[in-house]
Amino acid sequence: MTLTPQRIARPASVTDAFLQRLVARVPSTGGGSWKLTEVYTGEVLVELPQSTPADIERAFAAARAAQQEWAAWPLAKRLKVFKKAHTLFVDNAAKTADLIQVESGKNRRMAIEETCDPPMVMSHYLKRAPKLLAPVKRGGPVPFLTTSTEIRQPKGVVGIIAPWNFPFATGISDAISALMAGNAIVLKPDNKTALSPLWGISMLEEAGLPKGLFQVVCGEGPDVGPTLIDNANYVMFTGSTNTGRVIGERAGRNLIGCCLELGGKNPMIVLEDADLDEAVQGAVFGVFGNTGQICMHIERIYLPESRYDDFKTRFVAAAERLRVGASYDFGPEMGSLVSPDHKERVQAHVDDAIAKGATVVTGGKARPDLGPAFFEPTILEGVTKDMLCGVTETFGPVVALHRYRTVDEAVALANDTDYGLNASVWGGDVEAAGAVARRIESGNVNVNDILATAFASKGTPSGGVKQSGVGARHGDYGLLKYTDVQNLAVLKKQVMGARPGQDYDAYVKSMLSGLKMMRKTRMR
Ligand code: NAD
Image 1 (cartoon, rainbow, N blue to C red):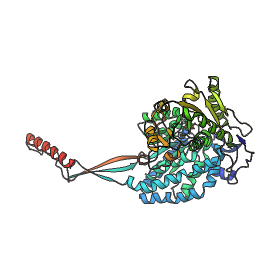
Image 2: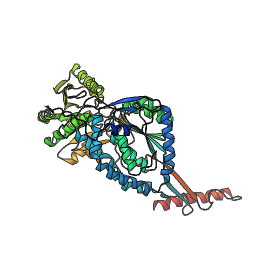
Image 3: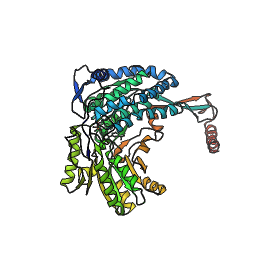
Image 4: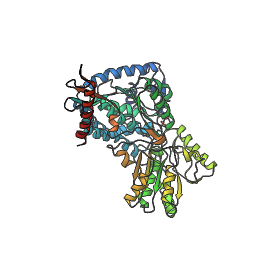
């Protein structure tokens, strides 16, 4: 690992006045605040106001009032806002990346890539929303005399609860399709990373989003969550599996829908005929990208006996070459973990594995010399299911290497987990690799890539199976989940049921022959 000299002058765009303007929109009548820090230095950036239950209820009332007007806008007028926003988001990518970096500690490349997600989502739904939201006429039960039309109505106010690992993408991207469909939003970002979503909302408002439509409330999850869920018409949650269970339970009690995008323990399978140069390069990103804090990142790598040593040698060398450090330029290839607390969790997983017999091939330690939350790129061998990192998500730059003898064994090992968010299969014969991919119990599987191909395919729903989630983002589902279907049925002339005085036997006979005729006409 190469040490990067510390160059951590805060980005010029992140001024105190700018930060104060951003946090001013968070309601807080209780006067409480939370010290939001710059991850690289641990210095306080701004006091983030904390919202009380009464503040949250008022935010919902304001959002609900704004939603009534917004939903009445013609769709084309609503979409115009996002056309303008797309330009603003792209033009301000560097400033957005500054904020993402100060609050999350990720490296510059990952911060810039994160800024691209909302514009990609906007582009996709700008094209697709008119088709998805248009009324669809269906045939009624009696040909010519009846019609049934599927009308898409907005749910109302959508509550979004977002994590810290991709605060801008999860805070803003998941709101875009909901807004296009005519909903209002109340967002609860993680306290650590509230700045970039607040900035995203101000860009949306500059593009013409009506004030009041997109509210933000802040606080610790268990303090804000109940009031938020109790007032929402739908909840979009991204975070850990444990919290997802709490959110899902409460949404269920309230009989509202929810989408839960949760954790993973994602496997990578390298097949015999894989291009090892590409697989190693993929693994470096898959394991260490975003400092291992991507929900779809790789924590388990399965290698055939014949290629194990070769892969291991190259992968370890690549991990040890990585430039790790704190900087707001493109120098470091890996940045910090999000907080000292999270660093302790990652260290605990590694220490537990070592105590139970795993071997550290490289890394394994925190790097206080680089900053308060840095951790080395870490590769382990001998990880088993009695170890914390053998079964639960570590969410750090830590991976375990495993050998397999047959493809069946590799598939069984990959599926031997409660999670099912993402998987990656590498092979020279793409058809054969695809056949292996289909056998993996996972909402996303990438062939010859780690995650970007699946996540950037905005036309396809992306979600987790098993304990990794309920529902999905992206694709038609990613917009339609924010709508209720109204079945608008019209009967042009009353013909159903026996007429007064009609012989009931004769009526039943004609109805039954009508049913036969209907089947025949529908079959044609
Ligand atoms: P977390 O579950 O601790 O927190 C996520 C959000 O929920 C935060 O805003 C937090 O304040 C809030 N929260 C916590 N407890 C709550 C409660 N009782 N009620 C309401 N809200 C509550 O997760 P995290 O540690 O912030 O994020 C990392 C996790 O997110 C990882 O497990 C990662 O895999 C997952 N993740 C999943 C996806 C996906 O698309 N599947 C994407 C990003 C992150």
